[in-house]
Length: 206
Image (tube, rainbow, N blue to C red):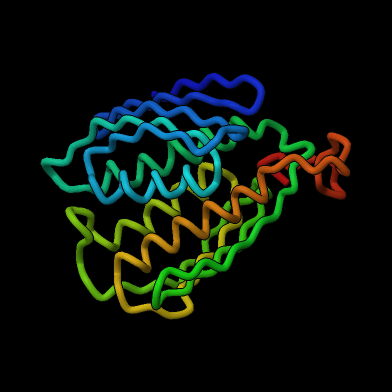
């Protein structure tokens, strides 16, 4: 069960299944304030980076079936945050829509390009050489990005051009996503409140 509320460019979403109970709130016009408790320390760290560098306020609390593994918690967290983003964007009128970022982190360089198109798609060209970062399975990072893109209506391309340290690779992905989102969700004064599409709509069916 999912319940949603949204006002202005803020949204709150609660989602309950037999695997997870999640509540989240986002404010697209925030300052990067965050309160995050997923039960997975490394995921908390990544979401803190996402908030801080996008300047989107994020509150998220997850009670998940971590006695099994981190899969449901990680994926469902992506779903709920993506849903909250989509609700906060509303009809997406007036936004810049596109964003991209090239983010270095020591020896690592990651590129993210995205379109808030309401047409979800993920290209993921990121490789890890270890199975876990903290208690998080590295294969679940792709699952988070996939869920976030799908629920958020985002065409999302993520590519690590090079890197060796797995922590740096993961963190550069979230920081690049954050910087690209910061651009894309920003209101463009030249749009005059129009939907940035020649179709006149960015509805999920277009």
